[in-house]
Length: 170
Image 1 (cartoon, rainbow, N blue to C red):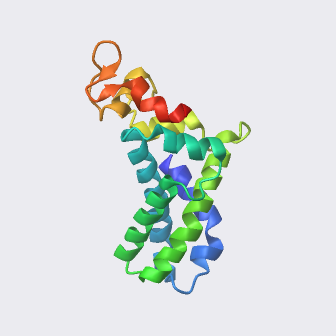
Image 2 (tube, one colour):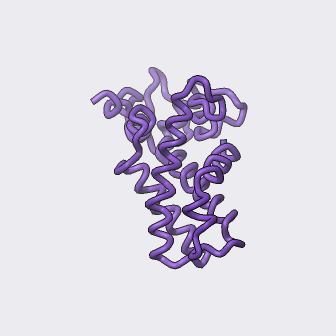
């Protein structure tokens, strides 16, 4: 998934990054990797922390504008750009223009049955860290309890899976 995400960023940042005088040409690929890495890490963090509602919101609406997920990814991207030596103002501007566009494209692609570049099941498997390449109940339960084992009845020490999913249906 990360390779496809990097390609998606690459395809959509020509004006914003590559043709941007504030981003040195030798930094273009590092900026692309920082953007895709920030989005991937944020989605993975949201999933592992049980924020299914936040993920469902952007994937179901297809509009990541103003979401907490977008804000977290933009903050991560800004920090990574600062680490590359890109000034704070440029980093914030890039984050504000790149992250929502890429998340929007990602959600569109997962919703499009004729586009096989991003399948929501594959995205979830990748985010959940399904080492065996399969997405099963133990992977899902592991997402909700930080990778621990489920107790009898499908509950985790911090509450049942249903408790974790309540926000998804409100």
